[in-house]
Amino acid sequence: MSEIVKTEAVVLNKIDYGDTSIIVSLFTKEFGRLSAILKGGRSPKSKAGTTLDPPNFLRVILYNKSTRDVQLISGAEIIEHYPVVKSDLDRLKFAFAIIELVKKLTPEHEANERLFRGLIRILNLLDSSDEQPQIIFGRFFVFLLEVLGYELSLGNCGSCGSMIQSGSSCAYNFSTGPICENCRQSHLESFYLNSELFEYLFCLKHGKIIKNVNILTAEKSILFLEKYLKFHVPDFKGIQSLQIYK
Image (tube, rainbow, N blue to C red; front, side, top):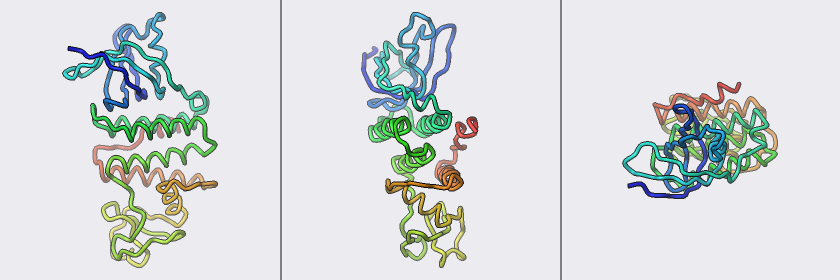
């Protein structure tokens, strides 16, 4: 028997189904990621159908049944639709990259309120902050790794234990973490972090203000984080949204 539930949700993906219906992937506050259908959602008379665009933040009513793979949407209203993001191609690209990561890396039907709050916060920042969108995306990426149990280590050398100082460069081994210059020659290197890249990642991890960053450093940080995630999650093949919107 179905249970009528209300929940907040972010639209991760939307596809047309049949002649008039819509199927969406939602990341919800109470139920985690789930699929849901709005029957007749493409009809001109459907009020809810116009709200189900990614990355909208919604309040939805569902007929929820635990034995059913696709839940039924009864109604939906917009809490936030991020107009600034949708009017800026660069911000939109990173918004889609954010929701793509959530869709690919979260299990179905597993609530994660901390991740949900972080997702809403980062979408709000993309829509309202003057900070460069690639920096905002980097902050979310590092946060997501920590939430999922793959926290990025940027403290001590994984070999000798010495502190990697601010302004230093180092090697990075995806299994053991940073490797200081003194130990570098005797360890496998997955990625090299020059001093600027290391400092930038450190600021992302610790929520520090980043006033100016070389665009190449920001792009290289995303490449590093993608490779780091691929190492820990072999099924992850990279962020398609960043390639599509190049």
